[in-house]
Length: 387
Image 1 (cartoon, rainbow, N blue to C red):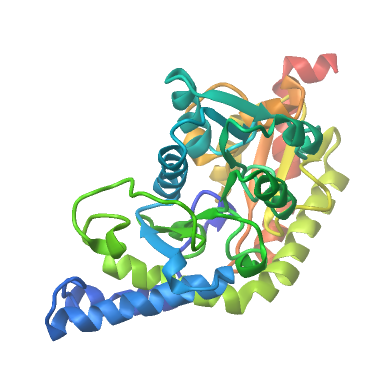
Image 2: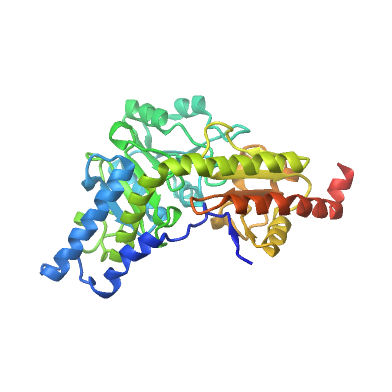
């Protein structure tokens, strides 16, 4: 049985082109890019090419604005701590109720260390309360960190508007764009975003590599100190092969953006339409208009999502009940709770996240297999008989 993989917001397949681009850097071009000799110099040139490819996908003005890291979480922590060091007298931080654990846990920790944290709520469609955000900005605010796209629902946040508000007040704005990069067009040259995080394994590069965009002129001090790599902004020998892979993945994403926004979106929309048509008492979570083209969060009332996942897995269908970084928790997703999704539905929520490698036949498989699975689980559910 060939698996149907629909969990691409957790991680993606490494593209063949990416893997082929990386291989010589394990076997032939293994020099240290910081070395002065030719063997290292040619590797340094390749790292710079990868930096250009990342900058191009983001629409950044300069390659100097791209800092390579180990992952999105490190990029997030680097951005937030840079802001705290730049403004040591400012003790107020702003984020949202639906952030990925990479930001959520960091802000909870900073709150215990004495920082004042304002967490902006969302409405039932996952849309940010912009009025409260505007009112919350004050002269004590060091940084606002709001994700570009939610990892569970795909809801897109108005980052350009948020950035303008921050700029008017002289406040740094960081966005965790791990789910958005490669799926929607970006033009950071013309957007008021000071720092942006991305992760390689969300866009068909390997795990263990990420990047942080830092706009020129943004106050910055390194999170990891030691050697002079990355122009003294992040110590540690570069993960060269993975950086090369990230660069190639960014180039591929730029070339495939149209497909992501047409063919993938059409498959996602057909999946949603058919599931809603064949299964009673279910609904889509997230903003119906401003949403990533590949993401579908759907709640099936009165049954457990974990049971759905297990039964789908028996048919070779791989999806998730939310963020992979919170798997193992018995509590319903904090994102769905923040949106006010009732417990009877939040517990039965499944996230399907597609990629350019999915096919219409795979979507057909889900449409055929899922309705009887839901019906069978509901027959066993005491809540369904009382509904």
